[in-house]
Length: 585
Image (cartoon, rainbow, N blue to C red; front, side):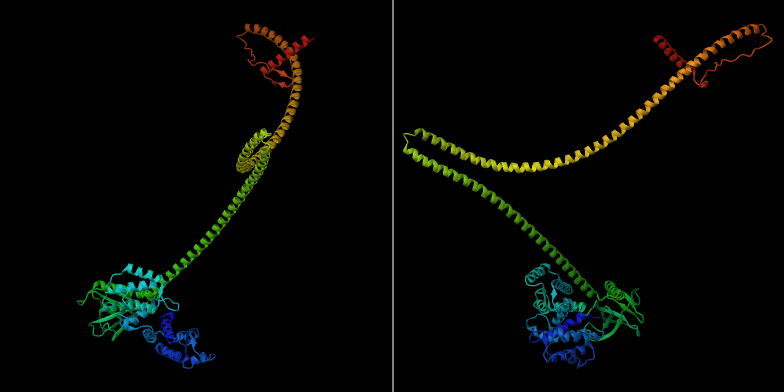
């Protein structure tokens, strides 16, 4: 099904052809005739009063394109059926518009080829009015034309023409394209018949939606004989004719999503066979060679795939993709141009700021120069005044030259001093300028030092804070040590008291020890006597004797409270104290 935009293009040419005054308006009588012809070609019942009814509020004047479009959409385009002949619509609109723009005397192609070029233009043109074809679509058309004619494509020649065209505009209208092809701008030296065949092939492919065409043998359904036919493959059907003039059509094979195409083995002396299987019938076809067989199978299979996917014809899909690519590239280019404009504005803004800063710096320099010049001028004026004064004094001294010779000598010395003063002042000005520069450098250095001093002060404050914390912690530790020292002193005092008590206890224990020792000596003497007595009766009696266990020391702390070593030490200390006490007495 053709889109509404494709149907409107030839109708637009018919409307503009009826616009004699070229003011965008056509009389109602002419629109009635045009509407009647459109309804006849599009196979729509024509309502003769619909136009008057639609424009009953208007006067009897002409109708513009904008005013005719609602009527065209409502009463004609909305009622279109799929079985109308689009080629007849093109021929009717071509008949109205071509005589006003084309003179066949100057063209090298026939009127039929001119009509086909016009139809190709309508197919490739943009959906914007007035209709035009962009250079990309022009190049696509010329490449297809040269490929159909079997000629080589001249890229340099087209680039030169595109540059020449781009200097004026970047697109062509239909009549300019017809003149370009008809005057042989790109086809000089090519046989007119070859050119006509190339135009027809491109027309069949693009406008008539012929995917592939050519002669093949077809097997009959009733007599089973093989007959040569001219086949034309479209997206939804495949028609076949007696010959390529398309006068007598012998049949049509409808293609849908349920169809399929398959290769067949050789049989009955026929090679390169394939079959098209449909729901109701199957068609056996014999191609001229193996390559043609594969091309036909692939082309038919692509059409079936497009039908299953709900796509339009390959050429329309390709045209839509090229348009989308151009729109995308145009959008990217506009985005890039906007970006460039923004960068340019930003650059201009930066340049203006730079100029303002330069101007400001220049003004500051001028002010400094003016101050310097003013200072020098004041010094020079002072110098001139001094010179004038000296000159007057000189005149007076000349009158008294004899009397005041010494004063003249002093005057010359004064002059020398003034010159020295002038040089010194000049040097002082230079020194002042240098001092200002040094002062500026010193101020920067001072600012840097102040910053460093602030940083150091901040560091010192942090260190001081840390020291305060350390001192506070040291004070706490000191107090803790004092407390521990006091506790230790009290513990030492208690230990000393305890030691004194132990000493007293040891002295008492020592006295007891002496008593016990004496008792042991007496017991030992008694034991010796017993041993002597028993030795006589040794064979009769064995006396039980104590072992080598040392006697148990008894103290006021209990039995065996101290070891032998501790007792000896305590005894030694007691003897030393006792000795010191005797010495003191």
